[in-house]
Image (tube, rainbow, N blue to C red):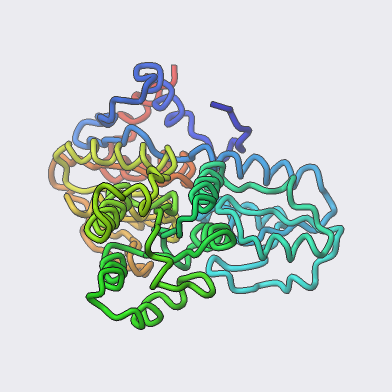
Length: 407
């Protein structure tokens, strides 16, 4: 796989050494057992896979090269490059301006741009409408398009099933940049509708089976479907694609229940005519990170810490997996470890911050599980490890461990 030029400030020699050794011992990535950092009275287990993925590194490399090669020009990002506060803050420091917030609200009028300006498309991609708006100004976006290749893979899969006459059901968060972009691409070719979760999927199924009247479609999905979507005919032949950072088990469950509904309505012998074999469209990093967390949770522990931006979908799902097993704290930097007694964590559901007291069991040997999202720099992971080690006064043990891993 291609190696990207990512700024040194995002790299950690410790984490890089650990990842490299695990990679050498497990080239096929079949071992999802975690890595133990034994610091004596503090034991930290790191997930087998975590941190920057291919798409994030690709986006960062393009963004920084764009800045370096276009000094003196105005450089804009359509929205956050990725959902990570450190990366986005660094880009702003270098003069990059954001045109929209992560919900699509305009921060700088597009009409104020000129053809001499540069616009970078973020890793989530963007809508066809926004692409056309930018191009109409005379701005060339192809060179500065950081859309993740795995997001584009979903779009291509959507195109393939649309050409065969299937409507598309998108499993994703309706307000997420990637879902909005995927919906734009899908709905340009075929009737499309977004379902956020299993609850919405079951509502859609009730409409499909007649348990709810067709007129209820507008109430539940009117703002999440393509123009002119007709549930009386557009739900007779469907395929499922997804936001690449969803929980794999959730997408699979939604796909399975929709397929079973089509069998119920049309019979097993006719299933291929009514349900597309779209296969799972999660990206490899989402799959690997989620599988690694499942392996991580096999270890008995006192708590888990997940690092990532509060708006990061893939990070939130890692928190969700951990919370099902043990107390879990979601942070975006080591600074949120305010002291050995206080942590400021984020609720992954509503994104609200809260102050938690006595989160570390300092009076006994402690085991902590750790992972991070696909847009979290390894430097944040190492800094978090160092800070917790200082609370337990095992910094010397950590330094020895670092020496062993990096020599």
